[in-house]
Length: 465
Image 1 (cartoon, rainbow, N blue to C red):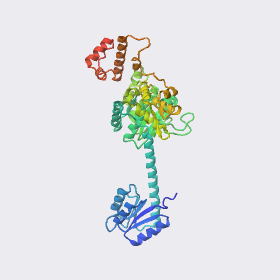
Image 2 (cartoon, helix red, strand yellow):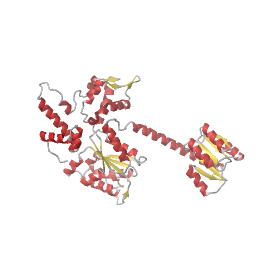
Image 3 (cartoon, helix red, strand yellow):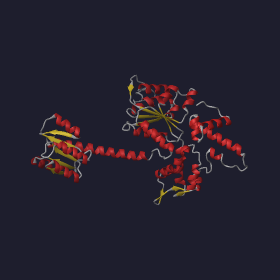
């Protein structure tokens, strides 16, 4: 494709002979020249006409070509500008290039040189526009996979992400399966200073232990059976960017020690090589495992845990921010094309109420799958309880604590049931607050002394923190 053909080129030169020469040359190339004799005339044309490039004389009667170019770039950001002058002044050339000139040509020059520079300039601009368009499309795609929610828990999570993104600190993202840990990692990367570089991920549980080292550090040809050529590992691919080590708790102890060294030294040797490779890679680890418990049972290295856990980020389970359920459902309905005859699909209030009782062990991923399944099997555009049954969703099966509030057919002993419910809530509060009694008491709206007394009365262990 000849990008020069049909291009609109602004030409500003106070020499009538050169202006006519440029006009004829550009017309011969299929361009549309826009000739002007002064800087102000050129700016007036640029303000009312689309232009693809500009050829500017450095010395004009009313202002310099550099000043014209600066104003043109305000009107048309990224416009390729060629500055032409008879002055062989290096400082002027540097000034023009710093101001945004694509090229600086010194007279005498040939029209072939101008033509070649114009072609290169238009090609470069076209590539930049295509790149910007692709970036925008990528942002739109990613915007459909953002961390959604307006609950206190999700707002707090966003604040933590904003703080973490400002640094290059190693991050450990924890949470149950399906909570959206990968979305948290993506937002940390995209809001940080490494967003222009790659976000590379590796699911440690999906790679056989014998191949994990080569996946992480790369390998050279002949390093092992099947290694017919050298290939970079994930640490090298993420150089300057971010590496997500997903399911890091599934690494062997031997591999943990090698990853620890990279975190400490930012260097490694590819498999089969004795050449040390240095990288600048930010590491974010994610897991649904209980790493402190794995340390206790000697299945995870404590030193690696402390290296990874510089900044901990915990993603809450869906049951802890169940008020976000309608927003999430509406999002998934839009994503999966939930519309019928121009009318958007929706769940009835009774259906939403029933879904809010569910424990959601699979978290947001379970909800996403359910919405897609209902769109396929249900009878929209309004989905009710019958559609839940069609999608094989267990209506009426809710959280464990909700079940304690349901009266069994044969009745129950109220004092015993209340004691069971109270103990369950206290245990949950302690678990969520990592054993901190003051914080657990606040969650339950109790004074600390009252909370401690309930612990003693229920026979719970009297923790000292």
